[in-house]
Image (cartoon, rainbow, N blue to C red; front, top):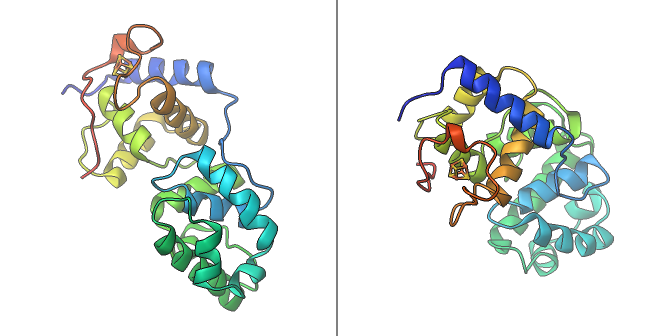
Length: 215
Ligand code: SF4
């Protein structure tokens, strides 16, 4: 697969910004605690489902302290319609207890501290910094990975390397471009039956319609 030229990358970036420049996350949250919990829950789960779950979860456990004083069983019962709910419940309890014990009950806002929390890897930390702090970071989920490869913006095997390629290619406005590629992948450049002929505004740059997935 041929990598896109600088000129083509600039045009792809321009079209993404024109189409999705005002886009924000579809996750609903009112604080840094709520956003971090929602992002942890969103792995392998739709934002729509997470928004349904978090309504009840945050009514029962409105603060990180309340979550830290809870139990795996209680959290699991509140998130049981989410995929991998047992594992996510364990991570959420450990995350909350760590925040209370080591960060004075305040969700940390820097990458290294975020990544020290249970259930928080590089993608989750970057999505948090993009959505809450509007910082210039890229994060690569399944949609961003697939669309980056279909558009010839990366041929890397892993999400982390793809993130590096996209960061180098775009340089600026990464937070908006992350959101743009998530929405493009979710609604147009879908894994199965992408809307190539009816909806795609980047078809002239498309290199492959394969369903790329990270190694
Ligand atoms: S033409 Fe189809 S596969 Fe290619 S970028 Fe557009 S929607 Fe995705």
